[in-house]
Image (cartoon, rainbow, N blue to C red; front, side, top):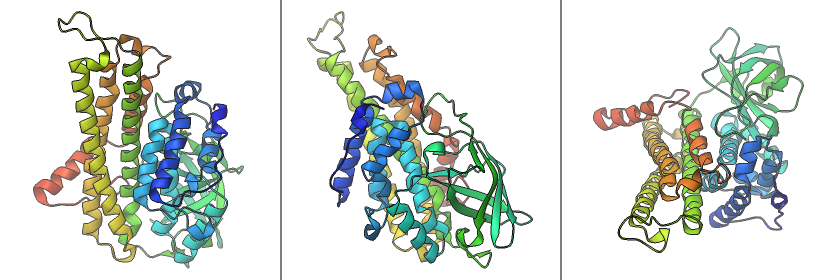
Length: 405
């Protein structure tokens, strides 16, 4: 990363607007060489250091421990800002926020307090090896300890994380167990095999878990080896699906902003149209296209904000959230996600129509936005999100909690 990443801040933001402004500063720094870093594909140590130095990694942490004390509405807006500068880093900070919050979703009050204090004070950066489509890690009970063994084909955060969230099934049972473990230990091997066309700096390759031991006391939400479920435990999927939505929107915003700058500075007006203009910014088809794309992006952002408001409502009473309330939030998030995907992919394609043939040069890097969004938007089929909304609209049904709904 360029030396611009060696930025330091003397004061910490205190309000939501100040945190978003801080994220915009970081995003601007990331954008200066995002294309070059994408081409190089190096492990993003400097980028994560920038997130830490800016204070953004502790955005959701308790104020009494040095955190920002902010809510998810602010977190989602921060994710959008970071993704506008670099989609990969937007994904990393989004996943970090989800896994930071994981203790609140499933852990005991004592575990939550301990994790959030240490994570905030030590500025942990979270990764997660929780790919549901792989066979779950096998967990063996060793009395006072449990041991995770297995492989995950995706593990976002990888080598740049301080801690990794593991999830597996206790051998001989159907009990799923989450635990937070140090990322840098001999029993965890990140395979450096993430080689996809987009989101290239997310450290999302496979990981081998070769006997990671954890005290039973750190098994999230377990007391005397038993878990007490509640509806709030299932909020992890809606939370992360809205994380996806917001970094898709950030990528789309980055695409539009970059295209606007190129159009203003370099795109030439078409000299053979019969109503010739002096500047590309006077061309009717260019004005029409930008107006259309910005309108669609603003509409998608508004739907994402509506979804975030439903998350805040649930977070205000986690102990008695109802399945219906959770399900209706999931439906709106599904709608927001499909709008973000469709709009973002359209923007990533159509920006070339308003920048011109020379904008396809590799040195310009306009391809990065479509590549990033196309890669991650295949995480789970968008058709199933449309079907969830359809069932709600047609039948009044809300989706049952699964690993993807």
